[in-house]
Length: 112
Length: 112
Image (cartoon, rainbow over all chains, first blue to last red; front, top):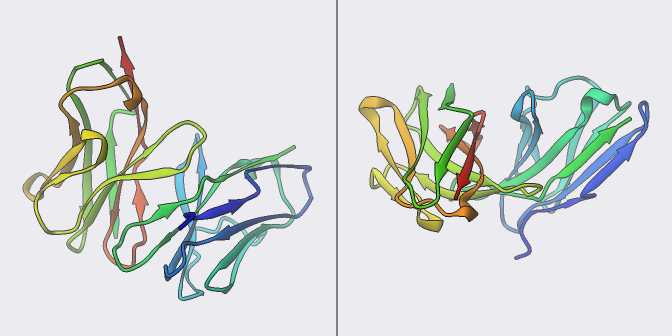
């Protein structure tokens, strides 16, 4: 398996633009997580899904953030409109029954 | 609710010296505990996990951790540091559903 695949690896966008981050989890995993990593806040769980259903989105910072999982092999995290304070590394992770999360390489987002 | 506290945001050791990274947890249910490592510009990689089997857990790259319920600790150790161990290390806890809560991380520096 190729592991968790995130795209793009790097994204630079202007304030006010819409940003979409993508994630392909490991096949067979039924949990998918979106994390954000910043120097100030460390690793924060934004939202997680189980069997494509959002279970806990209490970490989503604002209504500007939304996440979807239309099927078991794809998820998106969207920020609209983006702001400079959204600049961070966004990680997607997936796990199955072994309670072991596998992380993607992350998307480094810079909003200017 | 679960949480972890990592003591020391930066630890510096000499090559060949003992590595000790501290983690204390809080959990209202029997916890699953993890150590992850993050190399620069990379995602998180699982080092080891505790899931209520043996209290001494051996992981990759010569690392191990001991679960001590009486001390609510899960410290990470390695007998002899190598230059390639320089990275950031995260302790994490989950009670159920694979929802990981991470500590703030400890950056390990290895000097000659």
